[in-house]
Image 1 (spheres, rainbow, N blue to C red):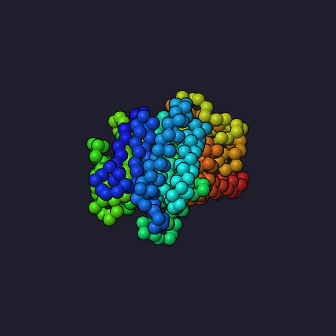
Image 2 (cartoon, rainbow, N blue to C red; image 1 turned 120 degrees about the vertical axis):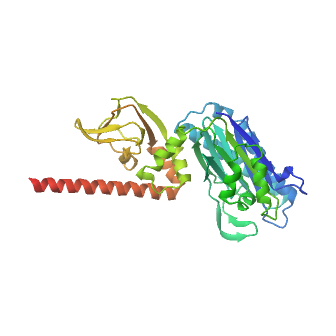
Image 3 (tube, rainbow, N blue to C red; image 1 turned 90 degrees about the vertical axis):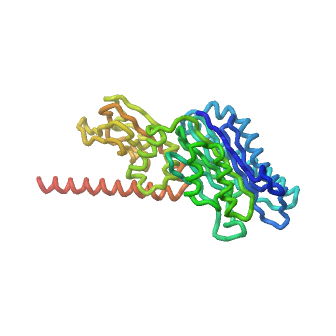
Length: 393
């Protein structure tokens, strides 16, 4: 899957002085990044800010260019995704050390935000630190993928940063996204997205001709900001947009599943990134009663039958799920599931799911609460059936 990159920043404009916001695009690496050095001291100078931002994107490019083996060996598996995300975290860890060294040499504190998108295989891996933004544009809709790492305290450029490059350690937010032809990923520096609302980003970034999108976004934001320190990067997944592309099927399957009723688009994208598609021929067995449960299955297409003691209990079609008990206490399967026609499923393994929930406690509350509600409803239904059975005897 090929990705075209486009970048723009005030460093390349006719403004006076260097810019604290820097953008990077490297199509050969499938890499785009935006960094912004935040002024935190009267000692901070324009050249130091520019040097800090450039140092971060150069460090990222250098480290990820050395990790070509990770990119080439990538497989759509949990272990491969973990390796890619760890590579991104390591690159940002090296970058924060470089920023610290620069700050010590110049005797001035530095706070640098960074947003990175690295295309590996058919997936995009996002790393985010600070209050820049990463947006996914898919089928005319804009999805904000990142959350600002800011607290409640205000300063002259916005909210006080709680995570940034320049601290002793860095805690990036990472995620994996299944890509589809026609997808666009937009990275913006803090001052740029503050000057634009989602509607403005949608109007510009969905232009059928990607050339000039970054410049138009920067131009619109510049009209609403007194400062010029802005940068923007765009990654475009090549190929024609398709209504039946796998990533969209995954999102649609998740969106209509009761387990994920209260999840935002961003959370659904995060969950879609850990799903594994599996296909079963008609009459083949998905799992048998008594087997060790390793995760929950969601039906994308086709139908499956749930059987107990060779008796069919129920058939499940698109949008349904089964096996969720394995997500709670890892028990043996309580029934056998067989495909009654050619069927496509999504598997979410227990290990991958709980790694995701550990990173996002809000998502954990939403999903686990829905699981408990479903189990409670099942128990209530079972109790009512037993009560009617006892009364009939």
